[in-house]
Image (cartoon, rainbow, N blue to C red):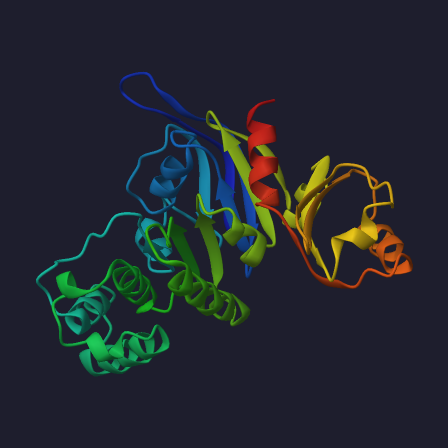
Length: 301
């Protein structure tokens, strides 16, 4: 069964704006799926229809086999949503925000209290449970939003820009938590502008442009469409590789150089050539973000 099934989904707003132009999209149960696109591409409209905040013009949308129109209340009980903007009471205690959210799902208070403790500890903000939410840092507020969204143990978690404004350390911590949650069986739909998150966490991704899905494939397959990639290579001494006639090479310092590999070039062949010249490779990594290059390339087509 698909966690999300969208068929010929259209949305035309009152001012004539055609936000969705017959979208077809399936997300497998248990998947970690990215929905990517520029602002105004239609991502928010899709999420709005799935969560009952936007009325579709035409087509069908289902959550785990439940039609969002015919079975809206039941379908929405299966969803947890982390919106981009903070939308909780800034003067309310952290613990109360999560516990009160459980009440909307009919969860008994004693059960909600235990679930709140589990989530706040898991997200490493348990020590802030008694403070008003306004006193939290931006990263901690994001974690609180996730805890609130998970209190009803949803089958589908929708994350709209979950790490916007979060520092690098907190972001990586949230990545690990979300990957663990996905391994436990929760389907996750992610929208993000931090495209390195897609590389790190998602198995599949769809790219939407002007209300239409223009790409939908595994992240690994999408990355294969990139024509070239630049690597940063560190060696014990760059002098050892200067006479190797390596194309598209740029020396950065005595131990570091950049090299651009075209489609078909093999990184292992380069490493072997350097090794044969006596150069010891101490580190090698991609420069920049591969999915971002692909994203820009596709949008410019």
